[in-house]
Image (tube, rainbow, N blue to C red; front, side, top):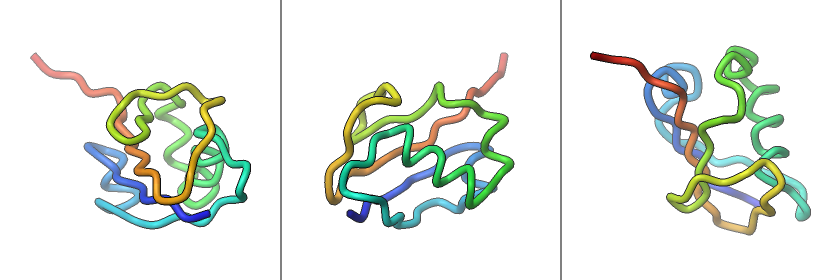
Length: 79
């Protein structure tokens, strides 16, 4: 299956703003995260806390479907 990945903040610097990712049919959010970390090892520092599927935060075990949009949202700080 193919999903769309959108990255924000520091993750965007590593991945670019948007890309497509091919995954097995039984893929989950965790599967997508592992594939992204394999493509760009620097992402592992962000851990799995900030992933959303179709604009809703999602747990690692959530299944993905063809065409889903997965957003990588790393922690941010500010004041």
